[in-house]
Image (tube, rainbow, N blue to C red; front, top):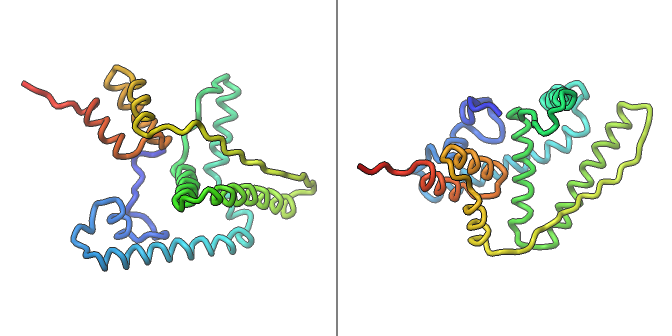
Length: 215
């Protein structure tokens, strides 16, 4: 993933540049409560309308356009094959920023589904993901292939034992490397995988990596 990606100054998507600055905490400190509520309402409405648009996009965007949009995934696959042929099976190819963004879409979807606190919503989440994969593969075959293969997606959610979050974090903290440079890399890795929160990552950086220097 490119470190030079500009999160703010780019073409309009769901968010305006001002929206991006505010959500990233780089602006908006002087907005009153009503202005904040209005802006968040507008963002929610644009997200909903973008999702409605996907119903049209999924069924009507030409194949050539879809292939161009997903070219980073095909590049990743070619790189994966090259690494495998070289025997470097444990080396993961770099993820393009667009692929990371797809990961964020699934992350947002999962977070939102769990946020309601209803166990039954997990069944809905699983069904939507399974159904989406099945529908996409079936439609691709109908539109582009002379052959057809049935598909039955079975997404299994395997949960570990329930533990207190503080105990979980204490266990991770105890397993951190001893070298400062290795700690920094491990904390970043844990945060990328969302195994720790942003607040925990910042706190551990302050505690282990950016230690104050005393005379």
